[in-house]
Length: 152
Image 1 (spheres, rainbow, N blue to C red):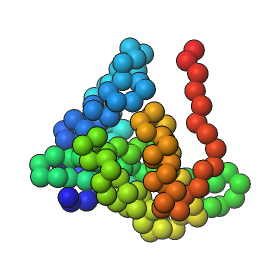
Image 2 (image 1 turned 60 degrees about the horizontal axis):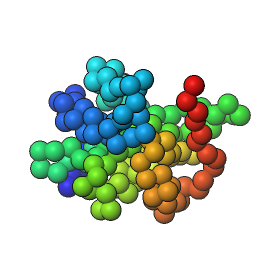
Image 3 (image 1 turned 120 degrees about the vertical axis):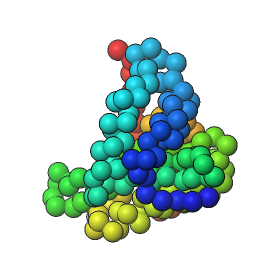
């Protein structure tokens, strides 16, 4: 397995992976949240093209099997810098391996490199939230709250 920064040349492989992610999420069969490849490509490009953001992938052979995106912001309560995981997905065939934890560790290393005061991980796709929270916990992140939603 190779772990590296995502590039523009990786976009088609990233989109193939994110189509699978979308289908697996709670939004996969929802007609109000259809996958929009153009919109997703523009979103991912923001991370790839910004040297201060994180766009890392896990590659096995010719296939992208994992991705993590991260950004940062300043805290509203002061000047602390908060690194935030914005998207994390590992193809189902590679879950239970070191792929997810290694991508998560890359986020934490990146957070340290940008002098973040804290790092935030999340589980908001509906894909194994308990397992994801447990993995974040093994890496030193503690639960802070809950994500809730309501269909309107």
